[in-house]
Image (tube, rainbow, N blue to C red):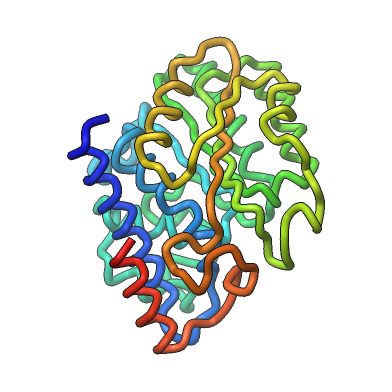
Length: 273
């Protein structure tokens, strides 16, 4: 990947992060930490990898993206606004009564492919979409973003077995491995162990990457979509709250309020990344 494209994607990721901060606003609860940790991944998906367009949002061959860790939907909302699915002004209405944008993904919002929020269910939805595409001989790829804490859900592994059984090479799961969940370190709450090894044991082809290196993310996505005969898992090492220095690597800002001062510091921090 050339430097110009890397700089383009880094700038898109910055805009996603600024969109997250705008969406959170002042004094509203929202999920800053997990949204920031996946911002680079979401930016590369929407502005490099996925075949999708706001003008052709119902194209049956469009690639699908499912935010399984639904509480991090602020990153997806920011990307969708940046991609033209809706006006950026709509971000400020998030979680308000009647808004298209709620605290977890809902399909009535433009560009949202599946309702999620109950952890562990997004991968099952992705398996269904990928299987449907294979049966209908459609040329699309399904990407599902899950959190490392989410991997404690048993449904994830039922879905992993099904994906392997049906040889869903049109399915890629991306693990946002930031190591922190709502109540503390993931390893202290429910140690999941060797994540790539677990997916490999279920018959998946696996990749391990730096989840904040846009070139690394893009390379892994390209490699994943070239795999045939099995689903793929990309395990991305990330930092909770990446870009906002006072929110990095802590569970405090998993779901916390921002003051006016916090917001100003967060914007300044993102601008100097």
